[in-house]
Image (cartoon, rainbow, N blue to C red; front, top):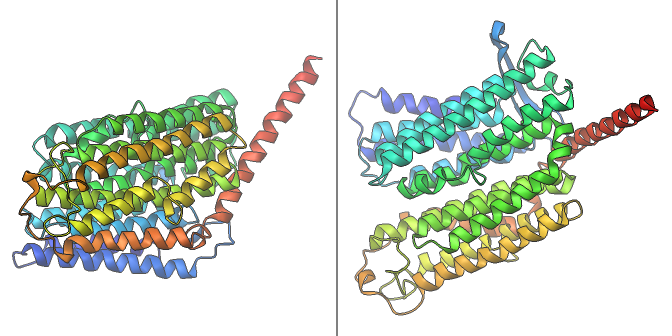
Length: 504
């Protein structure tokens, strides 16, 4: 059942790549939409059959593959992976629908989008460490090509920088996985059996450190973030939607699944430092966003800040904070995707993203009034205004983390206030005031340009008013993850007590 989520997009890629007739862009896009739409509908079907009260993996699949290497084809879905798989399908469909039908080399373009979706979905579902690593690396190839071929003027530099950073990330993650299995003497990379393995605390620190840097690059966290603004600025709008909405979540997913899951003792010791790291990333991202004049780069730096909230919640590791981490991942995916879509429309119609050159786009006669209204709603959601999903996720993060790390949580709250500052600067400069000369006589905005952002706006409001529809799938899974950490903390206390008694 889970393999269908991977193979349906791959089948669509095969149909596009090996069709007998030369495919025109609109036909290639239609095939891609049908494939992704089918996979997304199947995700919804699985969601209706998903038992939110179970802690074990559901719809599990196992197939022996390369047994001498310990590599098996193990797939499973729980409350952590289900929302992210659904988010991946939704945003990929939006990216395909929002791309221009006149894109050059349409076969390759839509094939790469389908391969990207399949590899990311497989990474979220993989229950074998080596299988996760393979799909984590495979998604690098289509994303690199999507930036390098269809990006902006400086796309070669941005794509190469992204490739180098992500390659280093993969090396560190693979080293941690190999080290864990070798030191524990495990014969397989299967995830669930490895959860019962325990390493000395010193070895856990080394392996967890490699994972923190590896996934920290992907999230990205300061100071491993410098590839992200360049990649966003040069990437086309659909690719920015996927990059911010889905790809960054591979890093936070990896920290929760493998960092907290495999090394709970070391995680408990390093948690205060992780919370401080989160606060630094939140504040740095906010201050850098304030300094930007490029709309796209401002939204990119806002992503760095908002992903820091996920690390704060993961560091606290309370049932509420971990539930908040999942909610924040989905919330940020929806909001960031909407903002990048709207920035793309502004750039397409005006030819610039420079805040110093745009004015008055909210003008109802000659401006972009609906785009401006949606942008205002998007920045309100990102700033945590009540009634929208951004408020729910940030409130849960702060409520779950404050009892554990009050100082770091307060600093992150300051970051939320700064979010309102830089997005107010964006809205005030671009959409209010007298319409600038460079923005007059704009081409019309069609419903195909507006519909994806409107759909995301509806979801942002719906989940903001009824958040239980979003978070109830994850409650049991996150509670089980906390229980594992509590057992590890008890083991630390027991070891310390025994050591003290022995010395006496």
